[in-house]
Amino acid sequence: MKLGILGDTHYPDKTSYLPDLIFNVFKSEKVDLILHTGDLTAPEVLERLAEISPTIAVKGNLDQTTLPEEKILEINNLKIGLIHGHQFLSLDEQILKYKALEMGVDILIFGHTHRFFYNKYEYMGKEVILFNPGSPTVPRMSDPTFVVGEITEGKFNFRIFKPWETQWKYP
Image (tube, rainbow, N blue to C red; front, side, top):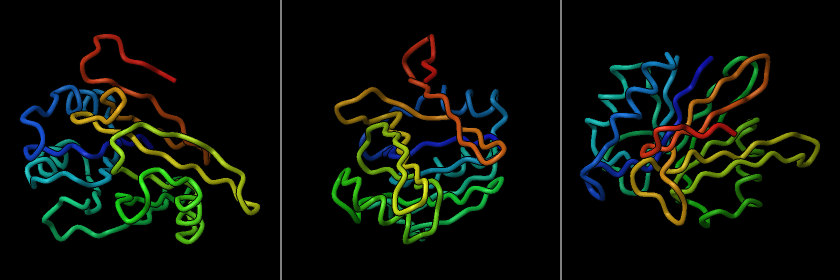
């Protein structure tokens, strides 16, 4: 299953630019599901994403919507947790690992920091992935990014896209 993953778009509260590349990539990659880690700040972002593929989003600290604070999904034998992350210190990996264990997920996808992050841990006898797609519009101390992920046979792989580059970066 292909996933479009992004967060912290902050359109139009902190940016007037929402890159067309996001929508073009999600369409051309034929993503099956889009995950947004919150701080959409405008319902039209969610509506535009939903025109491409079913979209699941969680509420960020600046969202004025009725989105849930967290969501758990099961995709191809992997449990995925989706949160914004404002409830925790910016990038306290220890707390995020505990949150993943509390939610019983294999992958915890979070936002709020506006920075891409990926790390895999063996923790308390369980493998846990912490993953932040970054922000495609208002990054902090990093490049703007969004991600296309794929879950096959219980494995999570991804490609990073940078909105201003003509050549996309692949990990």
